[in-house]
Length: 394
Ligand code: NDP
Image (cartoon, rainbow, N blue to C red; front, side):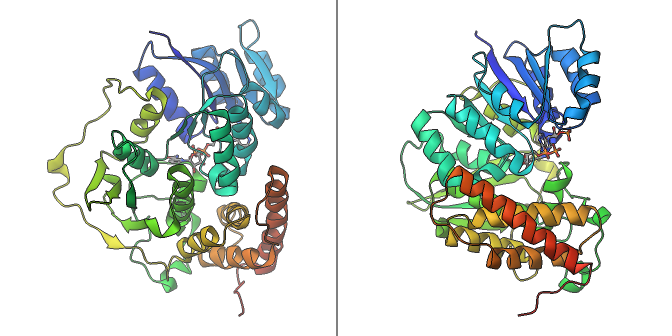
């Protein structure tokens, strides 16, 4: 058996560390060629000493010396800076790139990997949200596999195995509803960062945890699903399913629905993306139906959680508008995590940014990056103006 040679972008994050657990759980299946981090030199060094990749990249250049010294005498090459991420994914000895950076930082390295003909396991949904058309065009042009890691998209992908080209009527993306499911806007106006970081079912990085609390994560997933599965907006529904056991569903033209189920544990979809098309034995905890005698479903509340409605609007408007939504969202989430905006103000600021930034029909990569910069600048001004009392005046 030839081992799959993988590069993990964002190895020190929630997805990255779970991917390394999968690698440990499947001995003989993988060879780690590249590991990267932003600033967490300590974790990157530990990982490098354990897996001895060809190269590690620390994006924060000020950490270069620390990593270099710690890996002195090993075979591991150390690189630093954002540009190095684009370089290492093109390495001849890489078969598959796990894109698990958070936010817009994922776009350029993922595009570089696709252009170099590498298969992609995609966790970084922001790449498709920002530049879905451009990325999918490149995927087709370079004939690479784009394998979803997000549990919902992995579920859809797994439901489609064996269906050849049977048309999809619609898909149902399930959502846990986050920590504030069923709460009123009054309640949400006072919630804290600490409350928002308590996800009921999943343990994830800070940004996606806040996105889950605001339902923006589901909005980003709706956009991601459109591109991954070539769907129209009206074919993508969201169903709140608080137990997070059904990871998503596909309804075919004959009315049949296929669902994929399991425990809310990201190691399963990560492993499927890494071992695809094979299924490999592991000893991860198994699902027990008796632990979940009731699986329940609710409508998503887009009046209270306005971000989901904004994401649908961005998708319908098209062009660079999802990129505007994504950039403004990254800004407000970072501000919320620093206690600089309130929970409800986040969607107000995103909406206003979407109204202000110039729309482009068919953006190039440079246009997307320009849109990202401008949207961040505008959202940043609105955040400063808001000073915790900001309310959009219509
Ligand atoms: P984390 O914040 O836990 O990890 C992000 C990783 O990327 C870390 O290794 C971090 O390094 C690195 N990183 C962050 N910013 C930069 C940057 N500017 N340049 C280079 N490297 C950077 O995120 P998650 O693992 O939670 O999420 C990663 C992606 O996967 C996101 O797009 C998320 O939406 C998606 N996803 C996550 C799920 C989850 O369960 N966590 C589920 C489904 C999708 P450092 O550690 O040094 O900061």
